Amino acid sequence: MSKFKKKTKADTTIPTSALPDIIFMLLFFFMVTTVLRDQEILVEQKIPQASQLQKLQKKSLISYLFIGKPKNTSLYGSEPRVQANDVLVTAPDIVQWVNQERDKLPEADRGGITISMKVDKDVKMGPISDVQTELRNADARRVLYASTGKIYDN
Image (cartoon, rainbow, N blue to C red; front, side):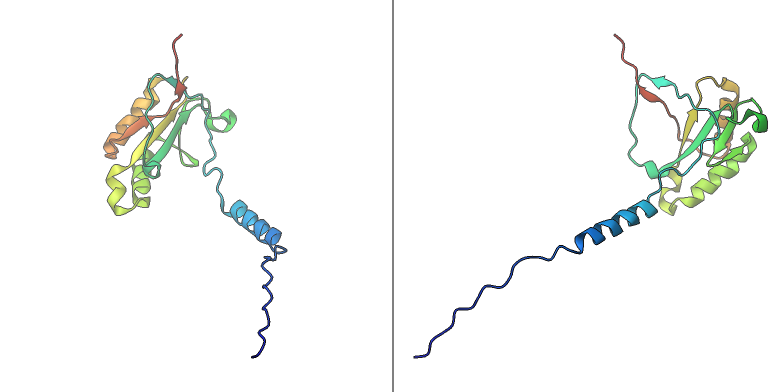
């Protein structure tokens, strides 16, 4: 009878010398592709507090309007202004802006566009009602008013 040799076990270690390179490549990839802020706020924002808040489910359907006194008063004056995306707009321009924002959405979601108004708490009601009127003209009926945390009465 012939003798059978015992097979030696294979080396089961995994080479880890390339792991730091892979980790740094992933880190750089996410640093390059991540968007931290997509808009620069040009108006002052002291958002009022609310007593009741509701969290939204689909944030992709929200477009933001900022209303407040301009930060650069020497260039834009001291009257409250409306900011849509990165541009200061007037009330008549809001209809065109809403239509542009609606066109960015998929066809099925265009009816569900929501306009979030972030209004400085020191702004009078006049500019706000002008914006509301223009939103009605643009058939943007879903309007919400952004606020900060909940007020707790002691």
